[in-house]
Length: 464
Length: 95
Image (cartoon, rainbow over all chains, first blue to last red; front, top):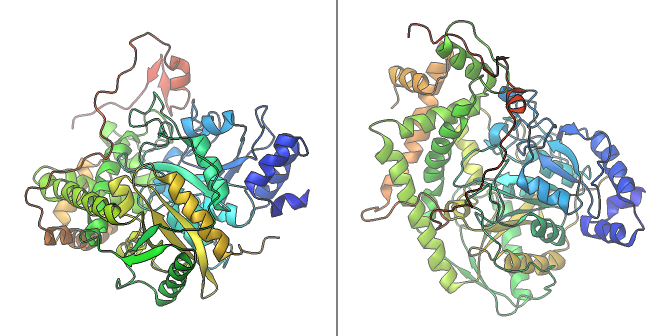
């Protein structure tokens, strides 16, 4: 059965459909692969195929998705041992389509981070080079797919947490339009930005998984019916499509990354697409706005972890001391930092100067992107300014870590979809190419990504 | 610049107990992050409407029909200290 490793999830789905492969066979194969992971990708692996394993290969699920009876703690010590009494809608949808939960993947604690080093349960290693980070916050999901310990995975993206690890691990990652996928049962980070999406080996797998995730959910009042039927991407040409490039002149963009991305622009033209440079005049302030909005919302969302209803409790003394000590012991450094920034930005006297201003920047960035999409079909950028960096390289400097999100932050601020596909290697490490489009343009984005993917012919990390 | 007493004030608001070492480190880190955040003010934001949410939805309602909630014993299952059908917590004390 080792030939399953060489198949995409969509190809495995065809075998499951025809009966050449049984759901239990597929599950057991992947369960064994997942159990043999030695990169730190998993926090929990299922021990046997559930009754509802069916027509899709099993899926690895980021730890922050609640799955009934299964440890689900957003890789935080403050949720140590938590087994939710209900299951996230996205996971239920995948199960209903026949994809069982293979395991829970490692991540930055509460999805706060760009390297997976903020996990309460240890880092994840990049399968391309074990001394480097896989990216974050969905680092475990990305590493598992890249290393062939999962056929596909889901993660969440708030400022880049699907696209950046996908880029650093050489796989495909899609951040959907805000509202396309229900957030019910996702342990919340920043509610106006968080969105669930697929991390997969290729674009076709991303489209297949995404098609099963979408839909309005009465349990998430911000979710919407997806306005069109999603098709399997088939495009091989880009004739007549216009691509607006942003950010290639930015300071801090690694030269090797820029070169590979320029090569991909050449591929776009060779496929008949048009390339022009565009300006997003306010997007340079995207990070600043993001690092107010996300911590502010996080500080409110994380107020619920107080040692009363779930998770461990520490501290003797009165109620306030119990709260303060439980939170001190349960949260890691980055989470504390963001709670502090967020609480400060929302506190009396500072709200307008920080949160109010950030919301205005958000409007400006959305206007910039709207204007861009009147001229071009897609906005394209490098996904990450650098290739995978060394473990430990940026942990001492929070701001340097935040710069990893430079190119990925504008899209969630505007609620827009974007995919990252691998487009080549720099220093022997994968480079991601980001393609963003207007709201609910996932079908067109994935079609263009499919044509590019075919022309690029990227080879994943050798898997054994 | 964020001073030590501001860090302590915010930590109290956030119900976080910080060690002395963390208070000093946090003052430096918060100052640096907020300095970057201040770049927002380089933009002309007069007359710009704030965006709190990207989806234009209003009053999403469901049918008002009774349905079962999470049973009490399931809701209490994960609690570090449950007693007599509720969550037990230490006394609020004098503070």
